[in-house]
Length: 522
Image 1: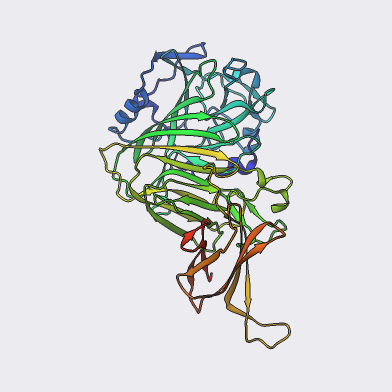
Image 2: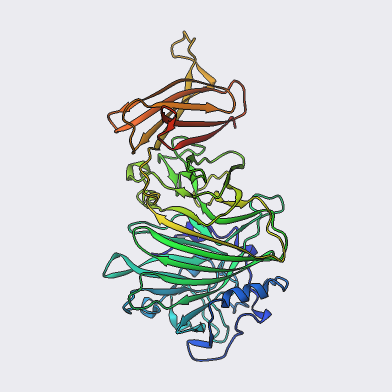
């Protein structure tokens, strides 16, 4: 699978902050060797952690590859003409069926990234070799002496067919990575860490400076990748244990070493794109929906399931869902039919959902959601992560463990009615006498279709708003779609913003997820 222009250009806004620090001496220096695997050394279980801890005691250095002539300003088309040779894929044909490729440096990716292979307790760096790549006619010539390092790696395993090693996970650009499950296409991304998202001084983007890929045992179903994270404000050691399949799972263990106090830090960050759908249409487009994700889903520490449809607002929107030790959260893609998008090229119905499942006690904090205005589907404009209540302090270490699921639907096995389809429109003035009828600009009609779960019997809807008045609440069976349709009207009564909340109940017991929505006059 090859990245589109859209997927590569998404990284442009963040790569100005990328760097490496090879001259600090923590990573191997450039070696003049003909061997592909160089600088072998013992690899202990705490190897990457010790590197990160030591690196945190030193000032950040922004290091770039000194590109040879012709490589300084590589275009997108030139860069995409450099492809890894599939015949050179590491571990290709071995019994475990895992293999991996490398990305060439250049274009937006000018910070050196080193990749190591770990086998039998020993790590070896993969020396730069142009022989690993196929250079098309648009690619500039190499000078034969510059160590170009690499820009990342791509892992493969036969998740769709026994005859082909599909790519299922990519690490490239800052601390970004993206995965897929069986039958899915690349969509939203995860990151190693978010720092100062939405802050006036601007966001900081840490990068993975180096990777260590552990060679799997012959019968292994999981591959392990470790990574060293670095930025002006923090270092970190990461361990990813990845099991590809219908639901590609990543067990993530990380330790952070702040170089300064971090009051605004995002754990398990994920980044997506939302342009429009039936509820939010700021862009005139023939397609009924355009998005990689259509909602934020969360299971609170108390067990309540929340669903917040995404929006493409006119101004930046920030929402915080305050909680203690959440059980999970994620950016989900619920629309799964071609007719939901009518896009033959992008095939948004095949984009993965991403669910983060915390392990252990994460304490107090909030799941924060950032919705950024955009007019283009090439822009990632949605960010979600866990923000701890207390700042991370300089000189301390902080550990987090969680599991990521790249999947078609949320993987928790809970049969709960969910809001699959939502519509909204202007409400009719009940006192109208004109033909055509007059519409009240402060009155909105909402339709939410709840699907799945057990909604038999006497089910009622509980609908509230932080401003304005809710009226005409009805919940009834929709025999056409086999759903339960909730309808209600909301009169904002002159307010500029209102938080809506709706849930289906049987008596006092909630029998559906809680549907949330932020209405804004703008």
